[in-house]
Image (cartoon, rainbow, N blue to C red; front, top):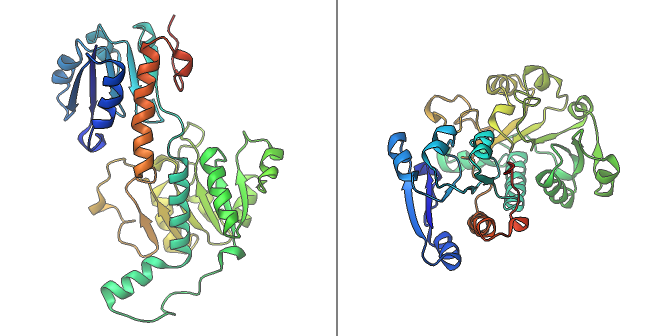
Length: 328
């Protein structure tokens, strides 16, 4: 058994000891190769040529890869997304593909609340007052609203959206949601009212995006949507950077249509921060797509992805989290 663990340098785990422990327990004689992909595609094709298993998160795995990796039996993804893999080609070469499932819902929900409360209480302004301007003045920023006097709208009421709603309600916020795929009765049982986007823009003091990226919601929040937001909301994006027109968001901040913004993602996954006009603003908090990141979540990510490999190769495919292609 030959197993390749490979990804871009900034996507590789800091240590692979836990992954190797799980795989070696199941396959004691396995040869495990760890390879940082730095762009030399020919070198990667040579390394994967005789491998039975690939564990990656974000490397593009296309038909050329499958053509070179004649022994490949499965591609395990230590990520929830799988659009980097050509599923049609994988099926043609009889290679199983499986991402991980839920491993960071709590972490992303907690990060959302952290951004929301920090922005609501003008924390970035006060930190700059203390650390940079050496100003000790409680009323140097506008008076904040109490959280319990505000309405949060969650766009995308899936697992993470529900977890955010639960925590927000615990802080006393009124919570509404936009999601055409959710049963209104189910939302009501959670104390959340489903509304149309137009009503959300009328009522929301805080908007938090958790939608999965699709053709329907790429560039979902544009100048039109920001102009429709009547209560100058705090805007939070925890979904995908491509859901937002960043230029329109900047204009909305400048014009006062949006009060402030918390962004865990930008349009470019590896952005040029030096040239991004959203960087350095007191009304914007940006984090480097790290909402998922915690001691617990990273261990779960490694465990689930490696156990998927074990289950798949030992004939326990019913225990694999989710096969995303068909093997005939």
